[in-house]
Image (cartoon, rainbow, N blue to C red; front, side):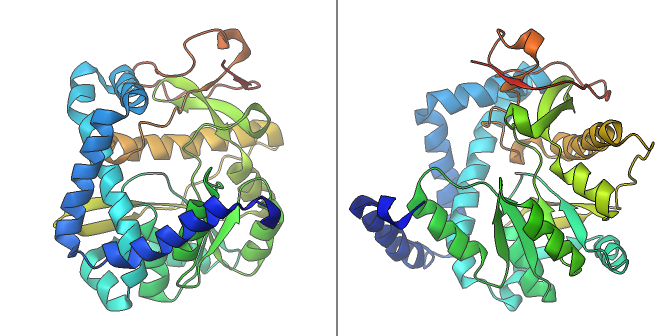
Length: 325
């Protein structure tokens, strides 16, 4: 946002956030996380539109009974995440050691040892905002994350400050390719979250829970062109204010020599990895996001993307994306 468009109300909003974050972070963590769950439950009760989206998508993917059980937990996780973001300003290496357990780190070190950097495949699940800071504080390794600009500029600026507090970097979508390539050439870690709906010009359709989902193809393009290792890593809540960051074995890329086909195949492969995690911990994923909003042309007049189909065939689906009305 240009400086001349940053209004007096925006400045006031940013000031309120600057004051609120240190004040709220004084609440003891366990009590604060419980408060966050209550806030999330309140959002679930008040926000009918997002509640309906979450329940419809969970029901279509996992069944009606799971929708009834999981939808409130999804919003409770959102509330916990909000509180964790307040507590990020108080993080330290000792605090990370107490609160975060790492699994599978050898997969990341093995990828970085190749000298071509690493694309970290992750998703909007658990306390995902905490993960880059936990890595940088625990190991002194900067994590650069590709992010979307938030709609409300004061919140965006405040969150960027929190994200970059410990040396990490936020890279805005839409202008990310060149800075990402420079970072990978320098052997750095770049986190990408390809689990949300994208506009037609950015995506290809791949299977996600049995329905074609328009998915950003940039990660597959970079991995193929520059032979960059792709390593999945996700964070989940363990209870009692603790988290687990699980690093998984690197993804073996598909290479046929047909670049567009390989981009499609590997985007499908990355999406299958994300789906596998979401199936393991469905209550911690952002089901209130309209993941299937952009539809193939033949479906563009359909349901607007609030549902999904069945259990998933695992087959990729190609073609151009179009946005449902």
